[in-house]
Image 1 (cartoon, rainbow, N blue to C red):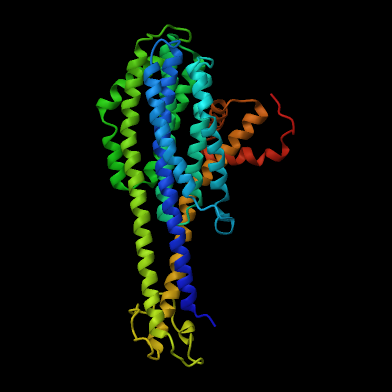
Image 2: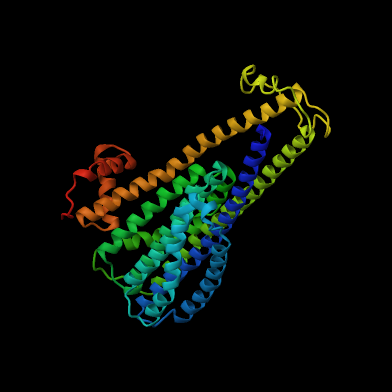
Length: 431
């Protein structure tokens, strides 16, 4: 009959295999982050190119496309490394589904670039297309965070996802403002979108701050130096306060793009630090689990061939409360020697430690995932409003935010209330 120690060793081997998969997933997230950064820059340049009716930025766009292609190759290589065996990976179904959708977007990307080069799309159309692709890639990061079972790694992934999402909103702000300045005229809808994007950045960056450690928060504070933000804040005021239809200085498009880029590049240093810390943590977790397994294997050797009294085996299970058995070394006997109560108590302590560790991990993981679950709920409620009231995403979010302010409630509480009404809403959308 297999012993408790045999199952402990099997659990540790499963943990190591899972951690190695998480390490591969973290490498994928790192590669996706670099590609998203390149696509954000490509989107901004495309807006400048289209906004100038093809008179400027053609060379810069082509050069940026080449940089994006190189990073896309690395992401595809990471996709190929993922273990997609159904028997082993059923719990990662959502992650693989997001990867499949992102792959479809990357396959369609050349056609988007052709339309930009031919100027057959407006800046708004090109921006929407890039946003959809970047959102598909960010969804991969979201599901990686949601499927991570190690709370420490999950915490880092949640921080990284929210920071990447905040940086994406900053990229959308750059693209929207670039198009406004390049067109030379203020537009009310785009101005409202800018305000929404600024608020969305702040919301995501607050979640990042809640989950990131002190060293990363210090890096983030350094990235927000006044010399980086001053010019951007001045240009924001120009764009957001101009009367609808008022002229804008088209030459300022370059200044705006550069100001936004300085901030986004500063954010990229924080993103890189987050990704590096995540990969280091994965490596640390794998090494610690491998050391534990080696210790279990040494203990297994020490008890192999022994024949303990069946009437005594496991007796201490009912004698000691968890945490009261003093930890004992795992090399108490030499191979072939019979083992007695000391080794038996050591195995019992290992079993209890494992149970307590899993409980702590589960509790911490529930706390970490609460942020992801709130996001899911808010997105579902927003989608419901969009469908039943024919609202844009920005308008749906603004509606929920206004409801929260009027009722003095949190946004998540409003979202839950909206979803609770789903069953009584008419099947056909209404205006």
